[in-house]
Image (cartoon, rainbow, N blue to C red; front, side):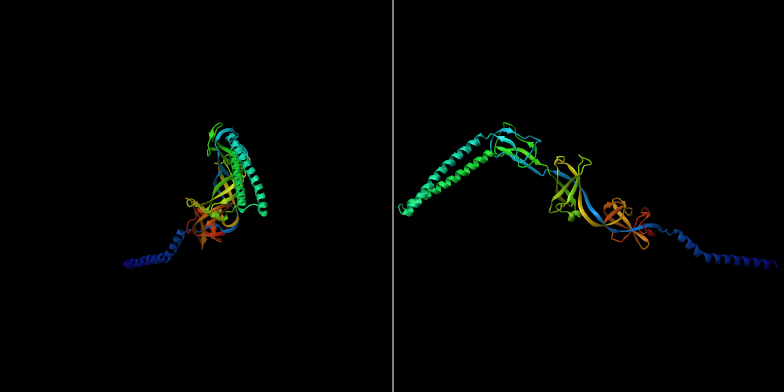
Length: 368
């Protein structure tokens, strides 16, 4: 009887263990699913905005430099001692103003000599003309031969040539006399004086360096992407470190025909009014070019992630985000221009971008 009871207890125990194992086998797949759900990344709720076109008053900011509008080195065309110095370093002169005089006495005498020779030639021409008129009448009457008439006509032609030559000699002498006065060719300032009172100068001797600075010339490079917008007559604004807070306005007058191969920029020139001569040649200028209005692609600035000089945005694509490198342009208020890497209508993340990576699942909602 005892063996039978032990046998029954053993059978019951085996059945209990088998049942437990069966139950464990039935519930193990559900436990695995729960564990898998715990490991899967959760979707991040983000705000998104669409890349859109908007009007932009286009400007370019560059560095430039100021140059004289005109620069000339004045030299002597005659020789002689300097008898007057009327303009010195730093002086302002007007066009036609006498800046220096060379002793004119020798050249005055040459004018008088040339004039006397002209007077004599004109007197001979007057006599020759009278003889020629009489010879014409006598020839018509048949009282002189053709040979005699030709001789009178030849003398007239010689005297006419002598008068023309004498007139040129007088003009040359008067020019030399005028060259003893060195006059300013334009309104400007004396940058350098290179001669002294009493010094004997020869033809070709450099006397002055003269510059014109009103208007003054601005030269600066224009970035390649703005070149199609460059036009003569366009406005530029500039500031200089010597006058902080002051803005000066100029107008583009010349545009280079080709880009600089090294910098990929186009050189432009502008003229800037400078009546008070505050702007000096050699100054560096901070230049803002007003390039007109056009349409550009923009996204909120909060959408742009910058790292190590590279700009990226996250585009929402079927429930995940994809990182795209972009090139940026102007910043207007809270919007940043995108010049490459994005197209109109793309939806980009504008919140939590520091938590995102390529492939991150998201729940996107439009930015309010």
